[in-house]
Image (cartoon, rainbow, N blue to C red; front, side):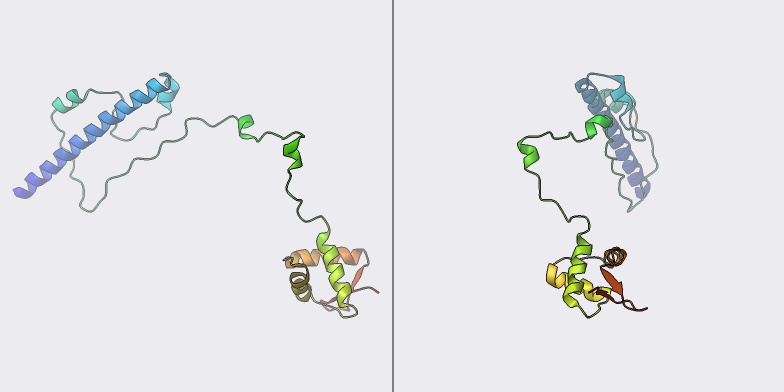
Length: 184
């Protein structure tokens, strides 16, 4: 008997809470519509939750209605949080693009340029000339680049640069091994 009375009281409290939420939500939407100029598009783009009132109801009218009996909430289950509102509209594509800078002081304050094209091949050629007449593997070339030049170069970039230097006939592969040396 006491348990059913407690369950009934909890369901009435939950129904009152839902009605109060719906009334507050409707009032907030009216304020937003007034601030937005009362456009129909603003009303259509607002997300709605289940159980939320579609139109504003006076608080006195909703309190006068008898409370609906709802299923009691399960124990240990937290109440569902409201979802965040979505952006009303995406900006135009032209507004999203950054504007180009023209000449003047802003253009003169450019940051320093990054590594130049062909820089890896030039550094590797210099390293191999320094090691001449000895041949070196890509791993040795990489450690020498890090030690001498302070440049961390990926193995694929080293292999690509070795291919470029071989095409220019600046270096040669030693036999069938994976070692390379500068041509004298």
